[in-house]
Length: 309
Image 1 (spheres, helix red, strand yellow):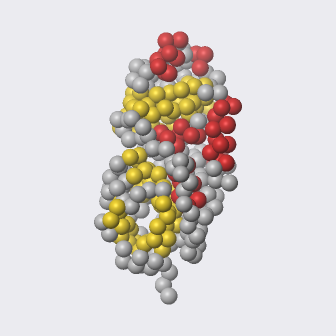
Image 2: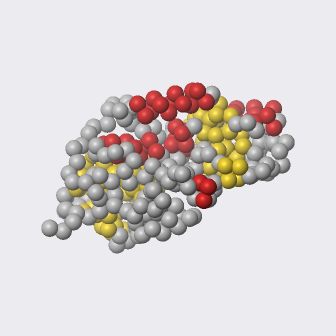
Image 3: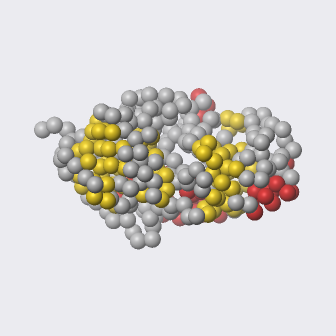
């Protein structure tokens, strides 16, 4: 009997194999990578009873990505609503479901959110590169062909596990998709004292717009420019969610595929919860920044982890 597969009949603009990320290699200049919306990604694995760090498919925008099954398979979908269909029948996110032989799963365009996560029993098969399966295009590592590139037409996906025991996502715990005006929590950093008082006021009291210059490396916000007395700093390590302020005063929020060091002044860093939320914001979306303490950010994170226990 042949191995069950999903064949890529039509490749969308950006379908990447991702897992929890690549850690412990920052000193080599290799970034974290991993699922941008880590919450939706983990819910997709949870729905199949997988370990939460199993490799899954991160699907951005949809773009008519079409996958065809050669055997019965159970999958799980979480995150954005990308107008998914099974043989033209609508499929809503945050469920596990079956594909029968010959059926096609298609992702069309965003209706709410930007990134959907498709999980497979036991996780997708892909080469392990430096402790992770995650694609990083800039570094050309990870993914199906170890080149960091998205899926292409003709690729075949296989997975590690047999038939899974499906779960139902508890009511009220669905991954949050962006509202008309999205609030992003952040923790202030040590360089905040170098920002003018008027800029600090503007940072937290204006509505920012997500620019079309946005990818897995960083997301630029546009609004009233912020000013710092620091023209630049000695390059230092950059955490996930770092809010850098370049000379034009427009914040750049650094995401999973960010560079490992940088020398722009930083206002602080988004919380892990806010990073997941921002990863679902389309260009043009409106966001507001809200400062919280490190203790509050840790409590948010621990509460989210508790949902999967």
